[in-house]
Every structure is written in structure tokens, then in C-alpha cells.
Length: 167
Image (cartoon, rainbow, N blue to C red; front, side, top):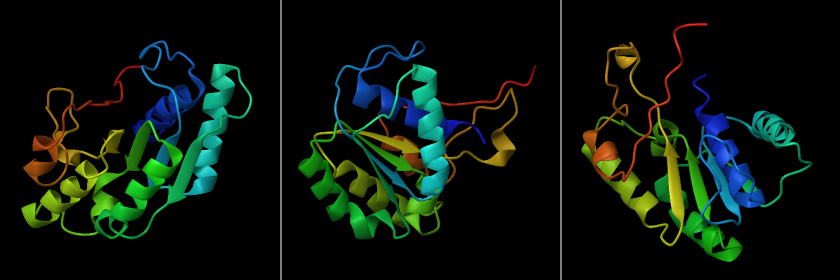
């Protein structure tokens, strides 16, 4: 309930439609987005996309290919590479890290192959959504991605979304 999936869907809608998101700006590239979802279900994501489209003041937003996933990314990386190439994707979203691993996220022998699989989808921007530990959710804490340090070490940028504690 941190709104990370909403933010990802807003980025997807902005990139496919060219719409400006005030806090982010105009997308540098416009085109298809692939959304691979290990955590939520399509009905909930459609509802989110409808709300984002309403917020943009537009009708249906096209060119977001949504896939509900259940197998490890290690099993489907080839499929994702093929779809990214076929559709000329600008952005590929992975929602979310813990579920796409299908293994112990604290082990480097899980983290390294997973992040190598993400990295193998080249020529496209990749957005991996992840959770941080509950113990590090306080205002004074500096949370890290839950699991192996290799997840953070292999990422180019990390954004922390934190719920405001005031009204």
C-alpha cells in the first residue's frame, strides 16, 4: 500500500501517451510499455490505469502490454526480451522483485541471476519495483531493498517512496 504500483502505472501511462506528469515532467521517449506483474492481478491494475487516465483527463490509454506472471523471471526472461523487441518497448516494468525471484531474496545465488536476467533485457529502460523491510520503515531510518545487497548494487538509481506520517 505504498503506491509504488500506482507510480509505475502513472509512468507507463505518461510514456505511452506523452502526457506530462507534474512531479516527473515530460517523458524523454514515448512508446509502448510492458508491465510484468508478479504481485497484483489484472483487474486491480486495470482499475489503477483507469484512475490514472481519468487524472490525465483522457480516455483509454493504449500501448501498455500487461502480463500477470507466476514463474520466476529466470524462466521467462527470453519471453520478455522477445516481447520488448517485438513491441519496440520504451519501458519494461517488473512488479515486484520479491515475487519475481521465486526464491530466498537474501541469497546472492538468487539475487545475481535475477538481476542478470533483468539486465539481459537491453535497449529499454527497466523499472524494478521492490519492498523494503518493515523494520526500516520509520522516519529516521534509511531503508534498503529487502534481500541481498546485490539488488541495490546492480541498480542504477533507487527511489524511496515513503508514506507521510502527518495528515
